[in-house]
Image 1 (cartoon, rainbow, N blue to C red):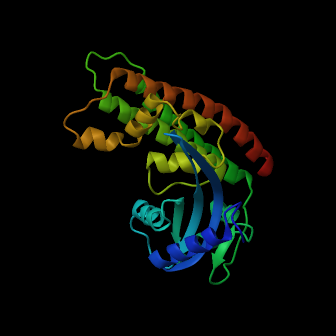
Image 2 (image 1 turned 135 degrees about the vertical axis):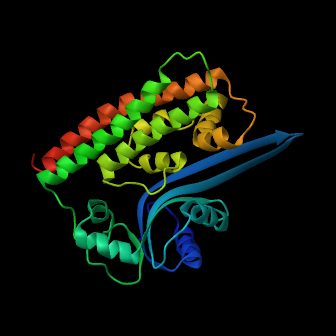
Image 3 (image 1 turned 60 degrees about the horizontal axis):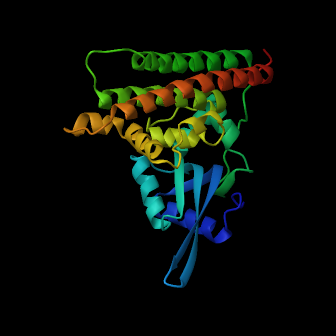
Length: 281
């Protein structure tokens, strides 16, 4: 099937590129965003206008062998697609899929359907979504657990210390936002990401969450800078001996984490109410 408004030629090339990197059994699309950029140039009576269009696609990929480094895989696809298509991929092996479907997996029950499928070698035995009061209790408990962790990290940001370390503060904010993203992914998709990479998790949440706009980088410099610092907080803390992070950057990151958690509390409560009806609570 065609993915959203992705041209068929781009889709066919994407499928071919992914198949060139790993032995694929099937692929399912979850979300797609289109970005268009226009640039205008006028100098010495010469005019020039250029238009660039690229896509961000969230995919579930079922391969016959294990993908050791999903970030490296995504980077290879981005390069081979001439930086026009950036994927945020979720990976399972065929054996994992078959085992999870046998045991019951609601995330796969939602994603693995013919409306999402863009490539498949052979049919899978699909089980569908499992609704039951016990399932709702499980969702609610894990949601509370993730939110509790996020609140803990946020509480450590809201202290007045005699000793300051902006790189350490950025890492706390990174963890607070990561746990909040994990809570969202669980309450919406019942999915636990295998890699806790902040940029990756934020883009997964972008498929369904309105609150995620709070932490996405804006067009002004400080927002772009702090987003980059947040995404690389672990590396900066551990491997950079000299840190040029302003106190204002730390405050900005902390404020993002607080606002995001506050918004997600409201969004999550609404989602749990919807799930309660689905699971007949």
